[in-house]
Length: 200
Image (cartoon, rainbow, N blue to C red; front, side, top):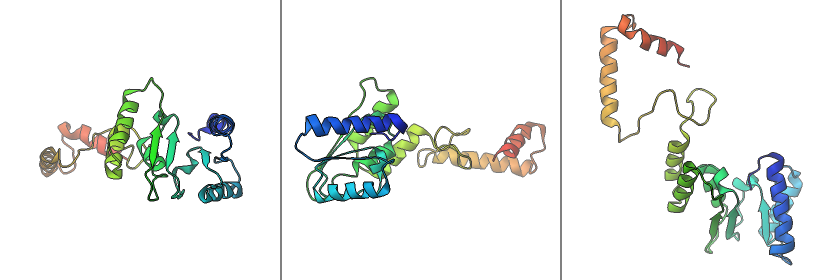
């Protein structure tokens, strides 16, 4: 479950009750979320690790730092709400032992194109590097010197090795401009000068 404030917490609490009382009655089920006191979270995780709790309902607080080798199955509700990095981290919470494991990504039927692409990537690979690269392509790199962590840059960054030739051409052109007009004072270079002065 996504942590996302009260709605995420209510979803997790209602899912916990449903699983405990209707889906797996007689199997101890636990609940963990970010608002629980640290001691209660730790105790719940220890009980899950020992097998005293057989089913754990959790918000995305389990995305990192959970190492339970006996965990073999995970269901991620509303998978379309998570980015690729988060989905990869969540999926990595199972399969840490020697037994076969499964991660089921449950999603809304009215997926966006980006959501479809994300889930397709998750089905195709477990390679963290490929997932990170696809995440960068889908979300955009954000600002290198600013605060935005996603979105397209004001300029497009090239991709190596695909754009190597274009990058060499651009470098050659830049050196040509600077060799003729080091201070960018010529009228045809005023726009470039302004752009460079306004850059962070």
